Image 1 (cartoon, helix red, strand yellow):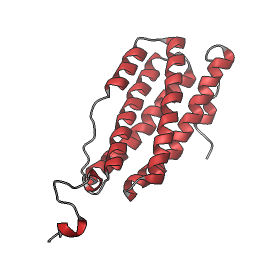
Image 2 (cartoon, one colour):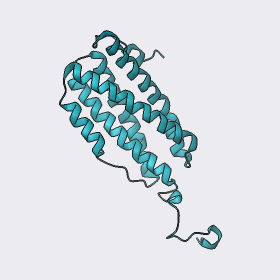
Image 3 (tube, one colour):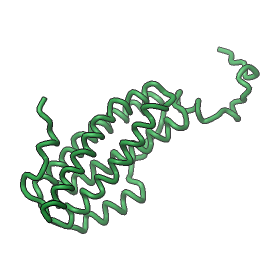
Image 4 (cartoon, one colour):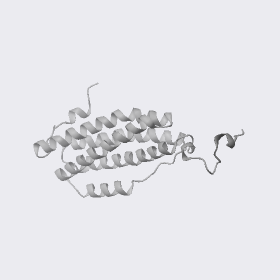
Length: 185
């Protein structure tokens, strides 16, 4: 198959990153890599929550992070393989530092720090996934972002509920808000 480079105005060496990686644009590739990093961090920190939290609500939230982000990570890995986009396999330095900080905490101190991080992280995640769902170039990557977004929005809402329950009561109590984490269907 012949490709007339004069028609595109680009040589292979000058090809923009927007058409590399099996059709995924540079911004789509960046999104996929960022989502993979974030997803790995959510799973690892969720595992910490199941071990270090004192509140049942925080433990349940952590387990939900493990379950939901493992599922999303698996979908993303499959999509990345189709698009020939290599994904990171270890935490970023920032996420590793957060994990290290959280791993030194136990009980109520862990609960408060973890839930604060979850509100911050999911606020950013929701914004990033909304941006990709609206402005992504690759339809498959946009679809992944669109399909994952409602789960992230639910995580953010639940993180705020659990965190708010901690603030209002001066600490975590057994049933301070996790019922919203698993809506009746």
